[in-house]
Image 1 (tube, helix red, strand yellow):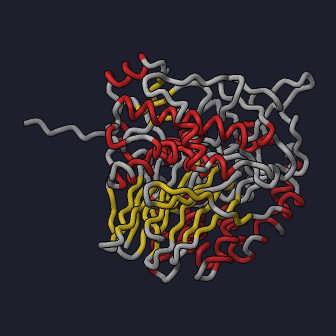
Image 2 (cartoon, rainbow, N blue to C red):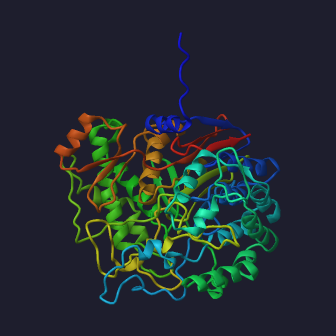
Length: 562
């Protein structure tokens, strides 16, 4: 009898991504679900030590800056949605900002044409980071444990090292291969002796540990003032960047009122502008509430068509109206999230025929694929949904070797060319043009759904422009189709963003018959391996049980509860 061959790890991960197998974790006292299990465990330890959900979120976020450098960060920015134990909900906006020297034509040549890649891959693609300020504000207003106790675990991971995993190894192979001229990223994945790190090695990051130590000791000022800020500004000046010490000193996170909506007895809280996620999510849930879903089977042709049409409309509206709330004071948020608006919008949906996206109108393309999200729920019922990002995987792929972290390339989320909107997704509408100190529009959609005034679902995802739609479909799956959180996370996801006029779909989860039927209705379809990487928690109030699940597309992710 032959001994069965072992499946190589990378092959196993590929199979898991195809069949979308996910495990769920149960707990009664606290839960953290993130894209790195070791970081989830850091957050869980904070909960066990008496910290609340905000404390655990801060510790988890700093840990991810060490363990998940492709997206976890102190060089980027993001958003927090927080619901406390009595049901009061707020949000913290720590989105990156344009530097003071930024202009709305900074990516154009002398002929007014967009210079290819300038807003995504040049040093001028780096926005003023917001993560440290956001985490510090969250802790100062709502935390419980001492700040230093929340930053110290990340310092320990960076200083003492952690096991280099296969996901990091794949990145190391990409950035250190012959012919790669990015000296910073080449050195990033090497040992002190110059050898490239291998799976199983202990990866130490002493420069990052030193930066985190300054943040531990001096809080927000440890990053935005003093030696760290001085080194950032000097590096920018030496390399042609435009971020200065003044930019860093002026940066502040902002607490904002959440976007709020309802769906059949549930209350939805999500992020307001400069995120477009909350507005689009509530608009789409309102549209679905207009439909008679009891007669529409999940994954059926009618279901996919209706979901795509809801997405099409929400993305057109976000392009026309949304941007930084501090620069666009007349955004019609109440209208866009109202039931009456959805009722009027729904009348334009033909259940037998696809609508047409007009490239002379609106559409959006925002946020890099390597955002990361995590969800936290503590024993007292405090909940945190936090999404933050560097934009691209490993952001700008730039940074100071003295500081040990990677800068974002979020300036690419602004509309780069005033007045120019194209069918390929480039947008030129006014609300999201570059301006000094303006925050770029985002798709990040950290969300908390409440039932009877208490957290019921805590959810979010990375995925760039697909974030809103993957969160939307997961919320719909849990609330409307009564799916378990792991099943809702792994279920079929599609994506339509108005422009380009295409439905992207997870190719292994949509039947050939359904694809043919959708094409006969006028839809154009494009397959993809995976959409989103959701991290979620549900709370069973009757049995007092938390259920956490991480998307199988995140091989290092996991839920940690107790």
